[in-house]
Length: 148
Image (tube, rainbow, N blue to C red):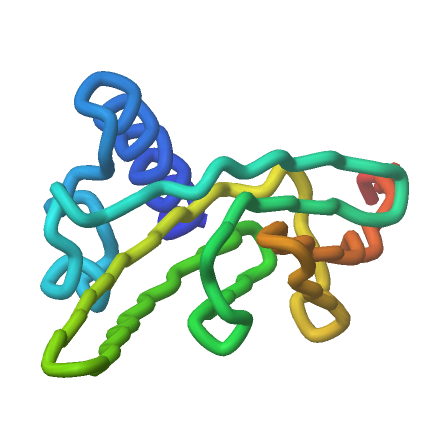
């Protein structure tokens, strides 16, 4: 329970920092991402979260990436999306050399509004839009308990 509260606090701090500075704080990212992200290069993809009766659907704008560049991590209450891309283009024609390099990093973590079943989630990527469908976990209904 304490870990869940800390994750929610961490996400809130990341949102506040990002709203103010326009990028995530390196100090507030998970340690695995902290070392590899430079604030000027880190991009936060825009994410829409839609909660339905049976599932949560997240869509993220990830234009210009290949699906192999994207990594998704799920827990029962959290979604993390990261991506890294490196491309190099080189053309040689009649003594003229053209070379262009491009690299980019993306990272976004969000707390989910309900608990999900990460084992049955599905993701698709088409035309620069990543869609993740996450079925909700079965909610245990409230049960009254009589005192003996």
